[in-house]
Image (cartoon, rainbow, N blue to C red; front, top):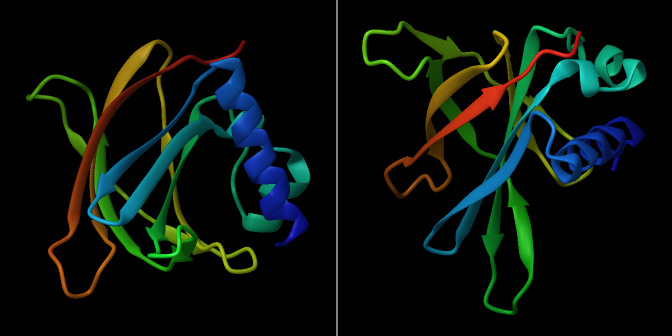
Length: 151
């Protein structure tokens, strides 16, 4: 795994453990685990952000989506997937912004990432379609997360 990806995962894990502007969750769909997390890009180390072309900013956040397939022998393997989605406020009248995902690869652990703008103390609603199995309909994942801007 590339050092940059490792650093990114470490930063995401630290942000998760501190409970500060991050959520790590997953949905179980049959034998697939669809993991998703969102974190303010200012938490990323400069080197990691530069290596992956991610803008570090207090008003920008990064959504990371990855899928693990559970095998019969109890192990898991990371899968390359496609993700489409939108983000917006909680009100049905709030505009929805499409998320533009791209693939980050680290060894055999691909993930889909999208960067989006946040506003202080605003809860954001995410709607995702994850194409995890070409023989199945996309998995639908929705979640809400509130972001805070460090000043």
